Image (cartoon, helix red, strand yellow):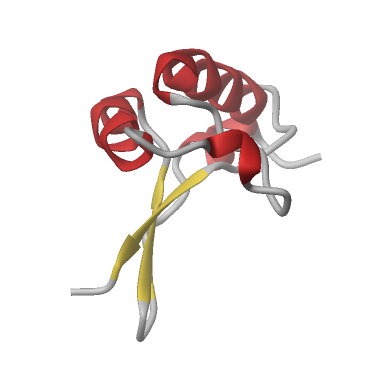
Length: 79
């Protein structure tokens, strides 16, 4: 089993088209803006919370990271 410290210190990954940043609570505002006005329940291929559910989503993702159960990232366009 990997150290949970290693999970909490994941690197930012850079590619040609996207950048993956380890998810942080500070990303919540950007995520809320990204889903504002969308019917996220219509996205059959993934589970995306509505704007009101972002805090709980981030909290759950970070709790799973801290338990070494998931490694959540924020996906951004590459610069």
